[in-house]
Image 1 (cartoon, rainbow, N blue to C red):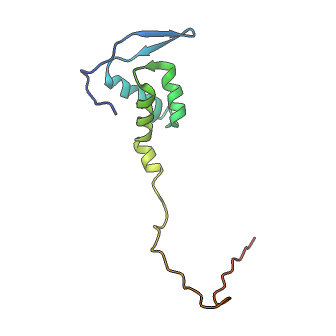
Image 2: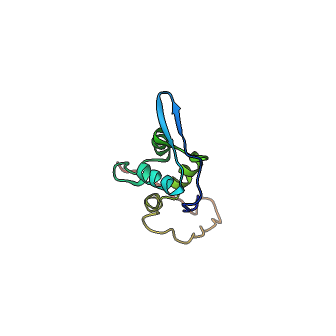
Image 3: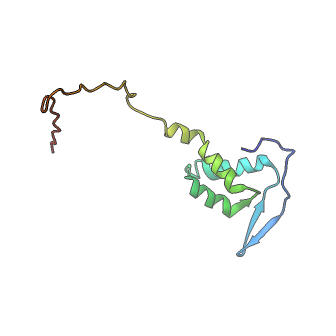
Amino acid sequence: MMKEDSTSFVESFTIESKNKFVMALKYRTLINTILNDCHDSVAAGHLSEDRTLERVKTCSWWPNWKKYVSEYCQTSDRLQNANRATGKKFGMMIQIQEQKSPWEIVHMNWVTA
């Protein structure tokens, strides 16, 4: 991800595309503010990566913006907490006995409706 440095900047200009104006961001802190508003805010609803890309595309632009948005979404705290494994932890594998003669060990699966 890009560093939080207000001295590093990108050229500032406005892009007109299909009768829409998109703001090109100048400071990295503004980029993080836009990403927070488009992904993490309550109004955004913590969108998926694709929907966040669409939302950012409508209001702003900066070099390598797709890569930055993708990294931001994948490293999001909420996403990391939501994808945490729940339930019992897996135990140790138990070795199955080798059978010495046919039909010595029989396993059955019962299907109940």
